[in-house]
Image (cartoon, rainbow, N blue to C red; front, side, top):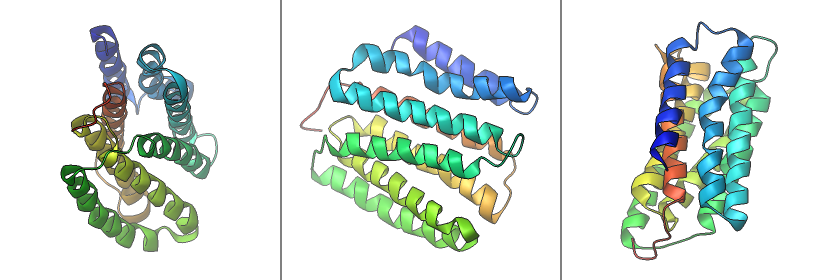
Amino acid sequence: MSKTINLTFWALALIYLLFMNQLPVALAVVSKAAPVLLLLIPVWTLLAGKLRAGMVVAILFSAGGDILLALDGTVGNFFVPGLASFLIAQVTYAVLFWQRFLFNRQRQWLATGYIPIALILGWFILPASGELMIPVIAYLLAISAMVLGAAFCNRPWQWLFVGACTFALSDSLIAINKFIQPLPYAGVAIMLTYYLAQYMIVTGIIQPEDRKQ
């Protein structure tokens, strides 16, 4: 990505992180989704075909989830619709990653290392999710498919897999904060890891295909 996109992305992210609790609802909605929507520029200009189309879908539904969760609790109950929007984004990412499957021993170990983490998260989160258990199960499966797909995708794992794991961390913080225990500075931690995850995923996916790494 260009330096201009990089600087603008992190400037927009920093603005939201600093003022997220002080902004009126309409401005909070716009500023929250702005960094992720900005990533459409490198995706559109540097990718092509089905990969570009899929990444556009994933980013738009991610931004939709941002908007719905920003509205949750202020103008209505939008947690489940926000979860559904992110679910579509996660499934889209997972499909794109698995379509570019690359197996080697290092990637196998990356995937194997994530599985117990996903099981532990499910063990703690699902019993506390109550009536939302079914959608939370679907979401955990989707994000696990995305992380495992990132482990085996033929792009630099240092960007893609780490980015996908950071996305899983962000979502885990949401679940822990909502269902188990309110966390200090939860909003900042959730959004910081989320912005980092989206940035790393897009950076990784626009890298040249690598059949050896």
